[in-house]
Length: 263
Image (cartoon, rainbow, N blue to C red):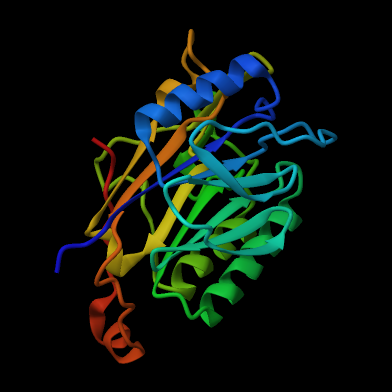
């Protein structure tokens, strides 16, 4: 059976969508990438009340921390706003989760990962995609301060992250294979040293991973057309025939632990 192609784009907008120049650049980028769903983190400044329109897209969920749009050619999807940091959009058989974990509290990040894991264990969704800014490095090598591993992400967070992957048989889709290319999504200079993190992530059900392509777009933070300081994510998949395997199948080895790194 031929699947229905579906594209999800995700980006931390660094609170810039209220800026007309930045919004124009976002619209040009969306016009070029043409996602079905656009999931953003930190779209607006915290106190901003108005929600500027994005050409070609309909706003379907919003908070100061996460907002989601769907292409106007589609009907409005089912929305579940779990919290101001976590919205779920159900479209074409896919449960897409837009998340923004705390940038300042390890305990809050760990608690949210536990909440996500609990929800994934209880979900009735056949296909899960979780994208957003996790504000953590899943592995030590995913976060560097200078040339050394950063101590920003705590061991308990990494344990909670791995539990989330196990909870619904999810794959960290941009984790490079052994010997593959590690791509950082956020870089800045702090205390005279370069800080680099792979913190903008896409987690997806393992049974759809082999039929998906997940890649970073670093151009969105490259001048002269930058509109954020984070790399964006593009997730392409086929939405038909994605039924989740039964528990007996998972127990007998259908789990897919392979990873793909972007080309």
